[in-house]
Length: 146
Image (tube, rainbow, N blue to C red; front, side, top):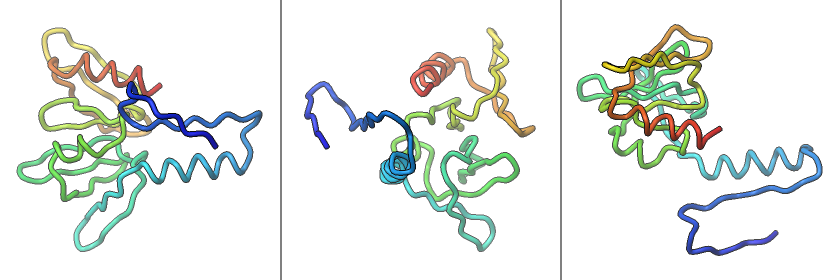
């Protein structure tokens, strides 16, 4: 194991160099991923759910509440959007004033030059709209997370 300290590094980065991906490398990858992912509790009625962030398509405000949407369901979270924005991994980005989207789940963007652009997700009918103000930032985030 080697640790390098750099003034140019804004956030920690873990690189695994190997000749092949075996069970040990997968376990290490999962362990590091679990350490860096925030633990968010999702609520529906009286139940608490512990979902992986990969399952979340987007977070959206509805009145005073924030909901996390999966392909088939929606769950309430007890965070404000600005709090989520600070704690979520880099593949999550603002899409509008009231929405944060998981860029790794985007299937297509139907761009409109004069108004909001439509975002479609894989394996679901759910969709959101990106405001023109956030469009370029969202595209940059998608390029980084590929």
